[in-house]
Image 1 (spheres, helix red, strand yellow):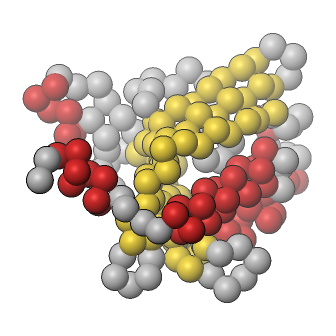
Image 2 (tube, rainbow, N blue to C red; image 1 turned 180 degrees about the vertical axis):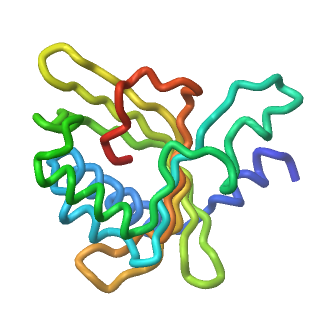
Amino acid sequence: MTTSTSVSALYRVAPELQLLVEQFYAAEAELLDEHRYDEWIELFTDDAEYWIPSRTTLPIRERRRQIATRDENAITDDDMDMLRGRVRRVLSGIQWSEEPPSRTRRLLTNIRIREQDNGELRTRTNFYVYRSRLERHQDWFVGERFDVLRPSSGAYPFRVADRRIVFDQATLLAPSVSVFF
């Protein structure tokens, strides 16, 4: 078996499941771009983790160490209580970095899905988040998300049980990371 065959087999899922996950992520992006954070936070399980590890530029022989592990530095390392607090601050209007609110656009691509024996899905998704703030300020964030999705019988077919966001940038030029990914 060639490498390309084994990689495609790793992410092979039924087309209906692929479409359902893609539609879920499109709906989530819409909630975020429309600042419907109170609805967005309900897409997460009560035990969810939302984590953005830091990244370091290292030589090729050390590239496996370029993304921080759980016990190292993180840009964000939130459990659900902390994430709900961030949502409350944004919605209250007292978070200076989002008052007035940023205008955002989220583009998601290369959604890869791996089914787990326990019914959960592990996904990898490339993202581009564009943010425009005030009259002239613009930022963009590019990277990959690693999610664990659990089936749900609610309004949406899944809930996010874990999210790790890995930026391609080692140095973020944005003055804040106040948008959600």
